[in-house]
Amino acid sequence: MTSLPRRILLLVVFLSTMLLVASCTEETGRATRAQPTAPTITQIAPTALIVDASDSMMVDDAPGPRIDAAKRAATGLVNALPDGSQVALLTYGTGTGTAPAEHAAGCQDVTTLVPLGPLDRTTVNDAIGKITPRGFTPISVSLRAAAEVLPANGKASIVLISDGEDTCQPPPCEVAGDLKRANDQLQISTVGFRTDGEASNQLRCIADVTGGLFVEAANEAQLAARLLATQDDSGASKINGAGLDGIDLGTSLADIRRQHSDFPADGKRDGDLVIYHWHDCDWGFTSEGTLTSIRPADSVRTIDGVGRDSTVDDAIRFYGDPLATTKNSDGTYTLTFDAGGNEAAYQVTTTGTDGGATIKHIVVCRCLPKKAADLPATPPTGLCSATHVTSKADYTHPHLGPMRLFTLTRGNAGSSDGNACIVAVPADGAPVVLKGMSVYEDSLDVADPVSDSTGNAFVNYNPGRYNGVYILVPTKTGFQPLTAQEYKKPTTGVRNFYYAELIGPGADGRYAIEQSANDCTPDCAGGTITKETFVWNGSDYVKK
Image (cartoon, rainbow, N blue to C red; front, side, top):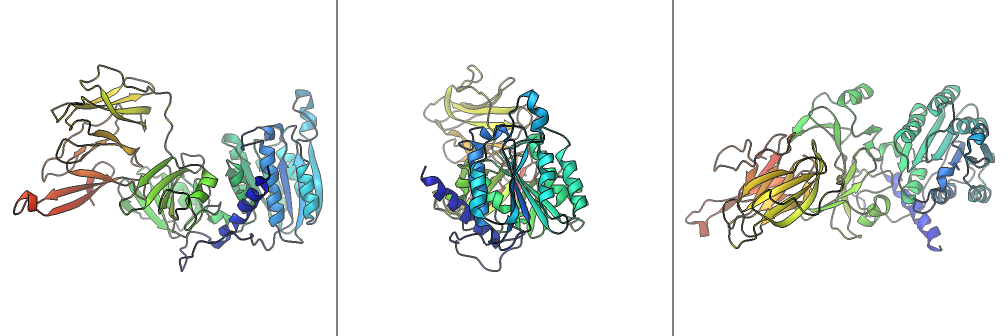
């Protein structure tokens, strides 16, 4: 396809924006949207590039064969390196098949395609283009072979692109540790292409024990960008998948403090989270002390170069279409993108939803919308007197798992007591029914999105004179009762707010409830309208 070279060029030059920002520190001035320019990699250590050519690299899911995407990404890296760089190229898996009788030979099947020497782009790129996957995955042997072509002392670098775990022995992390002890200035960076589980763990360990960078890539755009990021000294301080500064979502507060003695001792309660401000970032923890959100300064970019003043199209190029879109009260939008693994998502605040809309801020959180299992298109009959389905949405209950929420009314003109209900149908188990709602005609609908980072679900309704909000707070067997608010009484336990509407979710991934009141002075038609905002504190919605 004639469009591919231009696409890869755009992916490569886009990475130049990654060099603008390091760590969580805010820039002193707001930059205008940068135009793509060539990456400014000015100097690298002698480097050996290893390209995986095991048989799994022929899998057609990049899209296209993985090896084709890897070749284009490797070529992009070679073209971005400065003249005079000392570069070697190795591969494994090209000399044997994967039959059991070939295993012993396959575990030694490592080839040096270009020996270490001054960069000759034509020679290296020609060698990359001729790689044909066939065999096993001898990562450990390839690391030793790469170390042997590099200087035994002084700065040296290995960059490994792999799509799977080592199928030979010894364990690659142990070998990486041995190589680091032999030359303490050696760094090994690893790029996991469509890896997960043990394969990702192996590659992460290799990078960790040698002080290198580990990145995962789910598509060709990410692969091209993240391979280049291995040569960016500030790469570790950019948003990388589910983490920042080497700290991933899901890490315990205790572990972070063991690794970072300057991490604050005290945090500030913010709803159901405890926020610690450190390195100009807000780190959000659950009450159990698990990292669940990272809110960096506006200047921080992802490892792919996406950040403030990028466009929605830039984000889509790397992370796919948004999984959820919400309009905020200030006119901005929050778009949720898959960040790759660990239930991680990027909640991206933007000026709009079209491709050219500008990104203002990125939050990393464990807020990836869950995909429901095979759930019914309609609710079971006979569970309540209402039969007309007005809306439905998929929701992941923390105890009952994926379920589909249905709102039902009788569809009659006007309102009457108990003419509506909510039915939650889990993938496994009996339906959960919430009855006794009174709404006007069909004015009962699940919110969009149905849930937020609190884990609660939300339903909007109108009984005829005003809007209201039901909050479905999950329990081990279903949901808490929809206790109605009483006039001028505390909101403890309240799950039904009158004269109210949902706002958000905001940058923190949570809805707020905005409630209106009329003092009816001198009469209700001429009264003063006031508004109050309620936020979730972990157990109730309380005044902000």
